[in-house]
Amino acid sequence: MSDDCIFCSIVAGDIPGRVVHETETTLAFLDVNPLARGHTLVIPKAHHARLDDLPADVASDLFAAVHELTPRVEAAVDADATTVGINDGEAAGQEVPHVHVHLVPRFDGDGGGPIHAVAGDRPDLSDAEFDDIEAAIAES
Ligand code: 5GP
Ligand code: ZN
Image (cartoon, rainbow, N blue to C red):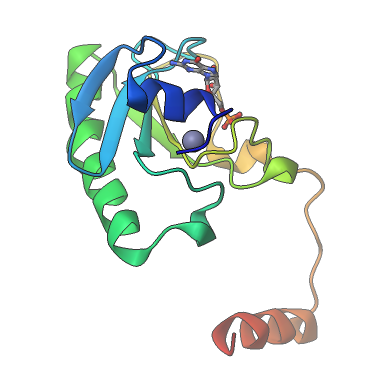
């Protein structure tokens, strides 16, 4: 628990949250400023800022909750699809430094875009650059 973390305060019950799902290690609640009807945040109860900080078992629990909730949220708001995303780090747009998965219900013709729309300029990579990146990740 982090004293000045808004999501830790929701877990602790110190500030209200519209909780839709809870397990021993995870909590899901409605986003207070939703991008769509049913926009839900799924978090580990323990305070971890970045995905890389999560212990493997908590990461599994988190994805299990995402897996269970996605169709439930979709059905509850009669959505056609869901965008699932994590802003992992400030440069990616993370504002609350407590890992959270966004479940954003999507509707045919809602005017939104695919996850490809989040990035800036696309790189034009040579085969050698692809080779270097492939090796850097595979060997890390
Ligand atoms: P981020 O930009 O960090 O990925 O997203 C943070 C999300 O948390 C935003 O969508 C924002 O609306 C939501 N949020 C911020 N403060 C609160 C709060 O006090 N309660 C709830 N339910 N959501 C919050
Ligand atoms: Zn926290």
